[in-house]
Every structure is written in C-alpha cells, then in structure tokens.
Length: 377
Image (cartoon, rainbow, N blue to C red):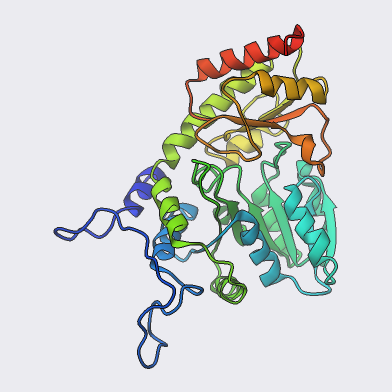
C-alpha cells in the first residue's frame, strides 16, 4: 500500500454504523480510573491521551511504511522532541556528534545545557559524511539531511552503519523532508525526529514534533522523559495534526515540484548565486538525495548581493510571506542571516515553496529581482 493511501486510512475511525468517520479531540486531564489502575489505558493526560494515540499510530505507519514494531511519541514542538532524545540518551561523560551546520537551536541546546552538564560535543559539517570521522567513543550521532538552511546531504545508511560499529546510536532530524519522503528508521537510524510544525502539518497554525523508534527500550525511555518532564501536546493540536496528515502527500508533491521549478529559474539569473536545492543536477549531492528521498522537498536557498538586496527582494515580492518557518501551503522566505548562528552570507535567502500556481510564483520572484536590480525597491 502506498503511504498516501495509508495516511488517509489512518485518519478514519473504525467503521461502525452511525458513528463519525473521524474522531474529535479528547479534552481531559484526569480519566476515570477506579481501583488498581495498572491495566487502565488512560489515567492522566501528562502520560497519555486518546487523541495522541491516533496521531502516533498514523505517524508510526508512515515512518515504517506499514512495518510493525515502530513506536512514535508526539511532543509540543520539534525542539521538545530533540530535547527528549538528548535527555533520554546522554549522561555526563558521554560524547555527542552533531553537524556544525545543523539547525541552530539544536546546536544551542547542546552547547548551552548538555555540554555544561558534562556531555562532550564534537561537530563536523553535514556534507561528505564528515561526522563519520568523529565517532570513536561516541554515544549519539545526530544527523540532519538535507541540512537547514544550507541544503547539504549526507548518506544516512552509510553513517548509521559506521556509527553502530562504533557503538553509537543515530538520530536523524527529518524536518525538511518528513517521513513521507525519507525513512530514517528504514535506513538504519535509531531515532527519526521531526519538527512537524513544518511540512507535516503544513498550515502554519500548530506547533508539534515527534520521535519514532524501532527499539522498545528506547521508546520506554522517551515515554518516561515525556511523562516526567510534562512535555506534552495538547489534544486540540493533536487533532489538527491528525487532520492535516491526509493532505500531506498532495501538499508535499506540489510544493516540491514548485521548489524545483523555482530553483531552475533562479539558476538562470545572473543576479542570483549559490542556488542550493538537492533536486538540481548541479547540487553536489543530487544523486545521493535522489536515492534516499522520495521528494526533493519544499526548501531551497540562494544568495543575493548583500543584506540590503535580500531585504529589498523580500519586501518587493507579493507572493512570498516573510516568516521564519517553512513547509507551509503558502510560500515563505527570509534573509536567514538576520538571526545569526549560521555560516552563511548576509544576502542568503531561505525560501520554502508553497502550493500556489508555480507560474505566478516565478513571475513574482522575477519582478522582485528586477525591482531590486534597477533600484526600485
């Protein structure tokens, strides 16, 4: 069964005469739990909620393309999911290997908290599988592919094999791809992690993340972390997330196709440099991306002359919403260097293609570039 069909089916309730096709959110803190509560499915909302259960079941099916034995836990944000992996695995004296160009906040979390608690941090770039050189004695290898925002790609399967030989667990930040496009667990990873406020939910209206694992012991550690830390997702957000899953295949296919055409157009412009999109044959990791991704994704980046040019381009564009997230049904963009923390040029623009008509998007991008070029912005 194709994942698109599986996702649609996962949003349906059991077929019983006269019952709704889709369930609603369950709003509860305590649940009825009389006597010995050991066998009660739901007791208190910090530990479990029926709406989570439905969403987690659907995500597990997606992560494994229907394979059994995969457990998924949802969290209130992508960073909460990342923190759960770090916190459930790493202890003082352990070594963690992260990409030097990983999502900036993930790096900050490790540098500002976990290293101060005694975790040793080693970093190397994503490209050329450079992290593989730092695995001796490591406890956790954290991958992000394609990297955000520089769109570098690493070989998940090869690095998982190398890490496991060294005795390290592997977590993959899959936020730019989603589990519809890329399957870290099926390529050997121990954790598949994502910020699902992006393409997974796709409407820029909820914040959540998830972690999927194959190993029961790792699942239990994550469950304990969530229960003890209180890092829980609200039932309304979980319901909206489940509702959004049904359209993920349509949204990701359209936004990925739009991103490809935009990237191809940008390569024709002399006023644009360093167009970075794994779908382009000019991308150094194109063949690898084509092998391990179903789609090339919605996100691309490019560089304009300087910060002023990038700011004026975004101000001149009518169909690009300036925002700091990606994966929405509407096209968003930002001058990424405004936040600091990444080794990118001041005029570096991260763009996330939405689901608009691509000819309209390209025409708007062209006029905005022309306006900047001739000084009208």
